[in-house]
Length: 248
Image 1 (cartoon, rainbow, N blue to C red):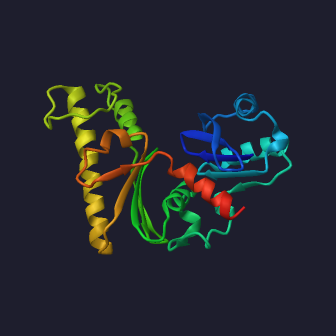
Image 2 (image 1 turned 90 degrees about the vertical axis):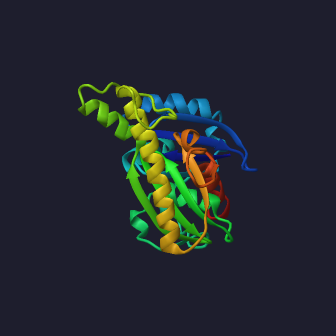
């Protein structure tokens, strides 16, 4: 049995995978303000026999949370707990940027899609809205834009007359009230941002790409941008499985 986990800024997802790399169970919990009580509760739901665990691998963008989980697991399992960027990934992926400044989740996503023949733009709607550029087997870098939910919450927190708003698809551009005006600004504003960044990536690289979108708002934008998008919410766990299979 293997434990594979994705520690994001907002949420941590942990998967129990068998030796055939089939996902058996998974648990989710907030990445911040975790404690032993939460971990005991969540991991007891995930794992029935700690002695059966052979591999542990996480991708993490929250070092404090990773070290907390690593310490917790080390007391229960006598196996090394790896973080993606601790491994030598050059046999899988050529990383053409500063390795230390690229998020583990973004490297893992790239490895999850890597097939050595296609070029990909990976658009991830997370705490930040990120674009990652993968040309054949080379990670070329990316773009980090403000996250939609974070920006929306900041606007309502800082502007007294703007309430908390759930973002949804809106047909009209011109809003008739505060809520529809904000929805239009965020929906059409981000659609325009996405289309423009994709256009500029193609222009700068002089390459064609497959666009893969993932993350919370991928449902909202998958059919609302000019570029045909492939939605895949499982690329991170696929990347973790590929790394654990080929490297650990």
